[in-house]
Image (cartoon, rainbow, N blue to C red; front, side, top):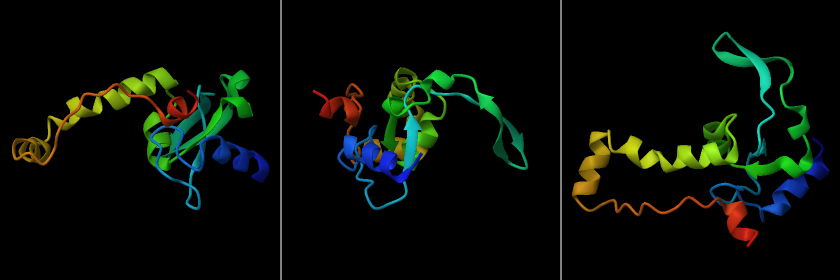
Length: 126
């Protein structure tokens, strides 16, 4: 991906992460395949290393890419957009297992909303 492609991706989301909406212009960000390409890789010395071609090369085009903050892209991994939406929605249930979260909730420091997850790119395309 060249500089022009990256600039295009960043402009599509107004300099924000296409998923969470966090400003990312001027910081390190990832160019994410919204629908995954599933690169063939293996675990070597504590990290994944690409070992072959993509399983879904048809998804490797600029129209399927979006600017993403590192946190969202790493969490999304090789999930589809809808699977990622489910992962984000499940975060509240996962937090409930943590004592610090439950304590903060009891003392009114946290208010849960159970809102429907709508990604930033969906909000700006309406």
